[in-house]
Amino acid sequence: MIWGNKINQINIIFIMGKFKTSKQMERHFKGIANHYRIEILLVIANHEGITLEDIIELVGGNEKTVGEHARRLFTAGLLNKKYRGKFVEHFLSPYGKIFIRFIKSFQEQK
Image (tube, rainbow, N blue to C red; front, top):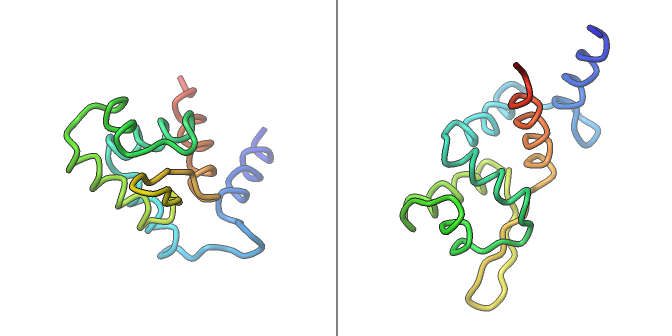
């Protein structure tokens, strides 16, 4: 199974036809380096198009804290936003989807 694990590692690093540099990967890893951000990513993975108000309700915490963590996930390239009138819908970016697979596989390890 060592070869299979190597392939999975390569899939995480090799995205959209090119390799990410260490600096580029650092941006994504720093983006999830907080328990609120991990929880927000997991909520958005289960509720694509969710608004910030609904994220706050599901995650708990105050509006400013959750909003700041969502902004950092967006800045890290892990979220996409779609503006619908006064509401903003949140979606996982392609990189966000890769990190969700990583987080879920990490959760399953015993």
